[in-house]
Length: 306
Ligand code: KPL
Image 1 (cartoon, rainbow, N blue to C red):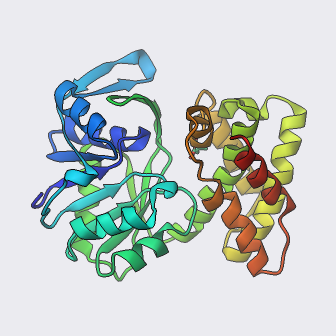
Image 2: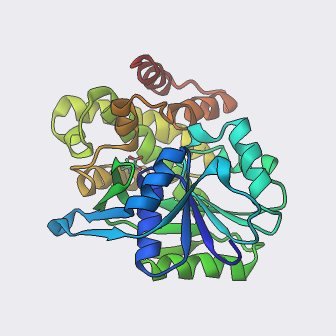
């Protein structure tokens, strides 16, 4: 893979990233969890549907199952799997294929993944990315781009400039709006807040994001979970409560027809990211000597769905 790019993950975000990169003529391979998906992508190509106007493109792409990858050289890995995929055996496999000179861009929701990766893959350059792009995987080879957002990449000063710039330029070339951010920590806390309010409630109520604000009862539920979560995250650098509330409402509006990733997981019968979102917030509360009854409750309810 010398100098080229691999997208690890054949879910919504992975297929969107890979489809856009290939459509822009950038050499890129998708690493999937199953051999079946890799074979289908290689044989049939990847179909990228645009929500607005319904334009659909079929893009030729190379794919490989994670278990079949051998000897990759220096390169960029866009890690587009859920936190739930970051098991010890997955991390061990990743450590075996990403050399110490490799760069991994982390697209996970929630918190805690950076530390896991840092411990399991010492020496690699890890870049944290936050995205508000909306995507829905239709099947193994088709993804729908459901909402335009942006990608923010953490730039904390001690990173290798060339690596950050090459990731930034590559994603820009693929048509994404990309920003380098020195204040990614606050943005991460705000995204965590947004996910902590929208994801479990949409999963429990089984509604698209926009439906959360449709009735007074739902708004009250959102507000209660928001108040508790904001209080906890303010101990971790999040500020401006009324602006944060407006951000949560704004995301519901901007993604009103989308199913949150947690609702998509629940519908598909997959494990959810509840432990690295609301579960993590309960742990952050405990660290501050606070309680988190709303976060505890939604965590228990989402876990009890299956
Ligand atoms: O990030 C999201 C998710 O679904 O995980 C939001 C912003 C809530 C959009 O659906």
